[in-house]
Length: 233
Image 1 (cartoon, rainbow, N blue to C red):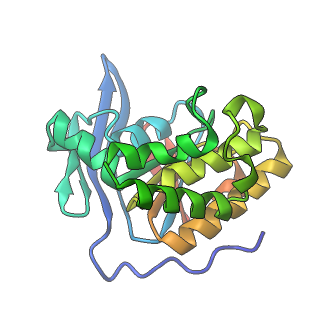
Image 2: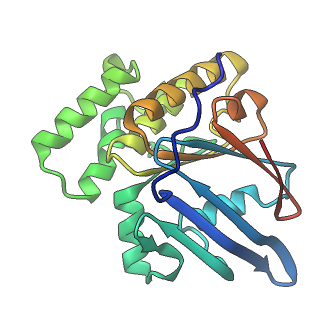
Image 3: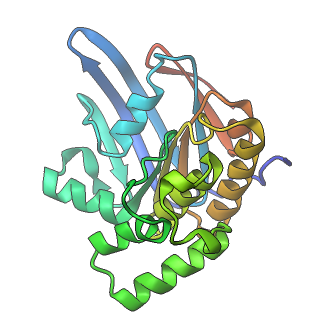
């Protein structure tokens, strides 16, 4: 897979800004003074050994956890200070997430899983139907739209998850080891698709990974160790 084009210009205000974020669980410090920015259309990889704080940082950025110190800005919102209702609204409207283990709802079809974020946003039926149709065509799953997740391969399930994460047109896309549960062949296909679709839709992407192949689709990498950023490439 060829290296990504140069990172988009950050001459404008970054879409995501993390300032001095710290997080502890009891007496154990997990993050300390983490700072980063990501621009629209930029892909950023978070790398580092297990226990370095990558997933905790991703959870703080996505509003799943709240940092103890510092600030997180998504566009014009300081999301770490929002109340629960406002934070839930930001997550529904502006953030998409892709997980290692897919997290598809087992009783919903492929099309219904992809449509769910639009239902939560009360998008009209006709618009929902068209967006789901277009995305399933884009990820090559039109013929599987009525299948249940249990009837899909791992690679197919992750393609559904990517479509679901992008269907509401988020400005920020978070991915936690998106190829960690796939073999190398399917992992490569997923990475190619993720790269193509983020080039097209231009969300900021923050990707947690141990995979060199996954990090290679990103414009920049931040390496964490013991809760701190120790290198950038």
